Length: 293
Image (cartoon, rainbow, N blue to C red; front, top):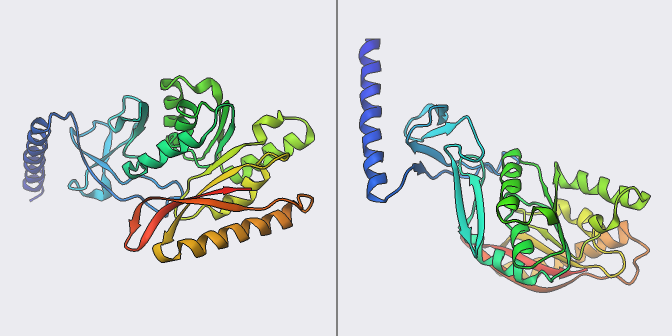
C-alpha cells in the first residue's frame, strides 16, 4: 500500500545518503554532485550538474528522479551549489547547478590574458562568469573591460568575481543580449551621449560555441574607428577544414565591412593565427581565430 511505498522510498534515501556521505569522507569533500550535460537549447548553456549530498533543504528532485540529484531553489554565494575554482591565480566562483564551467579552456584563458596589452580597452561579448574578462584585467592589465552577459546566474557570479579579484573598478557589465546592448551603446556614442572609449575597443573576445557568427557585425562596429583592432573568434570546426573555415571567416568579415562600413575602404580582415583550445567531438575542435580588422 501507500504507507509501505513511502517507507521504502524513505529507506532508499537513507541508504543512498549514507553511501554519498561515505564517498565524501573518503575524498575529504563536503558535497557530492552528479555531472550533467549542458543544455544547448536553453539559450544560456545552463549546467546540468545536480547535488546528490547533502540534500539541500530548499531543493527539488531533478526530473523527478533522485538518482539524478537535486536542484537547489536558492543560488548565489553560500548557496548549496556555489563553488570556487582558482586558475592562474584568478578566483572564479559560480553556482555549478546553474552555470557551465569548462576546465578545457584553461590554456586559452591564460593565452588571452597574455595577448591583452596594458592600457587596452577590451570587450567581452559573451562574458559568462568572467572566463576571459578576468584574465584581461588581472594578467593583461587592460585599462577597461566591457563585459556582456544575459544569464542572470552568470551575471551574479561575474559581479562577485570582479569584486573578489579586486578589478571591479575597471569593468562595466552590460546585461542582456549583446547584439542589442552594444548597438545601443554605439548609437549613444555616435550621438555624443556616451563616452566613446566604452564603445570603441582595441580587442574583442567572442567566446560563444558552437558559433558566434551572430555577433560578428556588431563586433566590427565596436572596433576602434581610427585603426581597427583584434577579434578573437571562437568556433567548433571540423579538423580538416580549419584553413577553409579561416578563409571563409575573413571573407565574411570583409563582406560585413563593405555592407555596414563603406567608408572604411582600406580596411581588411586578416587571420594571423588559429589556436586549438580542446577537442569538442570526434574530428571537431574548439578553436579560436585571431583576426586583425
